[in-house]
Amino acid sequence: MSKKARWLAPAVVGFLCGLWPSVLADTVTITPDTQQQWSGEDTSNRVILVNVATIIGSEPSSLYKFDGTASGSFASSYNTVFSNTAKDPSDATITYVTGQPFLPAGDLYLIVKDGNHDPAWYLFKLSNLDVLVNGTTYPSYSWNGQDTLSLEGFWPGGGAISYVGIVRPVPEPGALLLLGLGLLAAGLTARRR
Image (cartoon, rainbow, N blue to C red; front, side):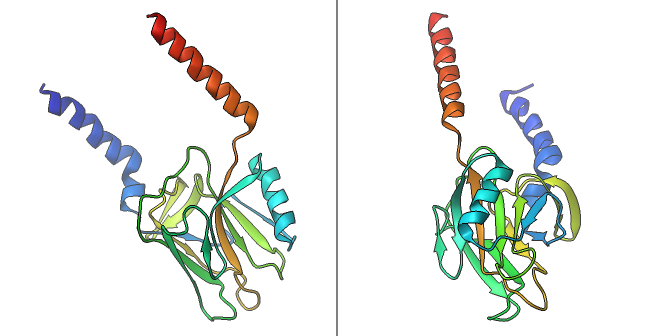
């Protein structure tokens, strides 16, 4: 078997088995009923972030936020449009536009906030969703950073999406210390050999 064939066969099998839904996906539909979600009644952004920190296990780091203006390190990579009506948008679309978004290792979360209704906010784990992708339901789907996120049916008939955001947990200093020690030990072991 040639060198080219040795790496090509596993690559094709990996593509077909593991990456097929991610590669083919164009639009990931998320509704208030999408699994792997949390919600709350709090309307203060500060209190919401405290609740999100409790859920995800550490302080959330904002990668992208859109409330009429985009902010965060992914601000130039995405375009968000609120739809239905200008004053009462119950839908939104987050579209990848340019650049290579760096998706950090670990979990990413999507926050959808209204603030005046119950629930006032939703939180979705983007790395483990049971979602509708181009009309087909996929369990345990992981967002690849380039698929369009279509948010549908949030607060219809009253309320409006006031902002959407993508956050990730900030690594704890202890976890970073353990990672650093592990890398140091691996380096020393490799050097001895």
